[in-house]
Structure formats: C-alpha cells, structure tokens
Length: 291
Image (cartoon, rainbow, N blue to C red):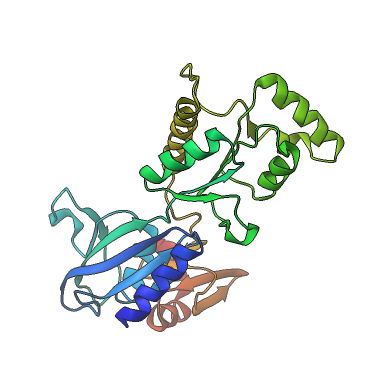
C-alpha cells in the first residue's frame, strides 16, 4: 500500500497538481483509523487512501493544511491543536497531521539572449524547475508556471503568442515599454485579444535600476518570487465539493458521492451512514424540528 501511496504522490507532482498528505498519528478507541494510516487530498477535494471512516474523512478534507484533532469532547483539548467534534455515534478520538505539497515552480524561458542565460542560472540556484526553449508537451498545465520571453528581437511575436497559449501565472517580456507596445499592436492585428495581451508584464522585472544582463535577470526573478508568494497564499485545495449537513448527527456529507440520501417533501437530505438515514425515514419531522 505504501508503494501505491508514493506512486500516487509522484503522479500528482508530475501533473503539476497540489495536494495534501494526511497521516494518522494517534487515536483513542473506538475508531477505525490507526497510526500510520494515510491519505492524499487532491486540489478538488478528492481523498485517495484511508484515514478512518466517513465522519473523520469529511473533516480531514475540509481542514486541509492544519493539524487537527477529532474528538467527541473538543473543549478538553490543547488550544494549539485544531479541534473538531466527532459526530459519529461510535465516538473515539483521532489525531491527523496534514501537510500541503506543491510541485516545484516551473520557470519557462523563451529566448537565448544573455539575460535568458543569466535568468536560467539564477533560477536553478533557487531550486526552481527551469525549462529553456522547451517542447510544448514539457510545459506543465498548472498554476505553477512562470514564463519569461527574452528573445530580444529574435521572434518576439511568435514567442509571446506561444507563451500566452500556456496561460502562465506570470508572463514577463524583456523589452522597453515602447517596444512592448509595438509588439502588442502586431499581435492584436494577428487576432490576439486585448484581454490576453493584458497578461504580458513589460518591461519584465521589478524596477531596481538594473543595467547588466545579470541585474536584469535578478529583477525578473525577484518579481517571479513575489508572484509565487502571492499565488501560494491561497489554500492548495482549489475548491471543496458541495457539502450537506446530516440532520441526524450533524456530520458534513459530500453531496456528489453521497451513498445515503432520502427525499422528503421535495427536499433531498444526505446522511453519513445507513443508520442515520433509517432513523430519519422513521421520524423525519422529529429531526427537522430539532435542526
């Protein structure tokens, strides 16, 4: 199982996708999760692996990026730990550690100029994944792509059009503002939209009064680092799936893959288990009044 877990992690990294590793580190019976059990939560909220039953798993997905403790008595726990109430009737306590994993930031450099070479050297020193004049298939389709066009007159328009097609988080163009405006006019006449052209940052780099190729490369890399940090403020979990509240136990249930549901008076209710659904079917009004 551990080998499968490693392979799944590597697969997501190769695809340029962010995810969260969840590992059970402690438990108190009765609960099905045991220390060492682990799972991967992908950016769309999918859970791959095992960290105990449905009650715990839905909370693990919801609380990605945090150390959490799931227990029937949350008020009795250390304040330094994120606490969530265990709503399953079985009870028990579970400690889960969650750690976000992001693929390496990919810097794609188009051009063979001195600035391009300096940027390549500096980017590798910061342990970024660097591609120069790559085949399109080598460019990841993720939010971790940062592109720089440093062709400096050698096919500027074609390089920019190619870069725009990759839809990077950052696209810097090494050119003066006057030249950049002229190139944008050419691209506009060739069918590139104004919205796409607005994504081009030109001149590329922060204004540090750079003059040499090395200094210009440094200013560009500094701007990329700033952009990377702003991008990564967001939780790697892109969007959690729609959830509903189990009217019996109060647990959150993922709507898309819910196994237990019941329609009452034109409203669909979702449940964590067969027991909750059966109880609701017998006396729906009792639980609706309580909720």
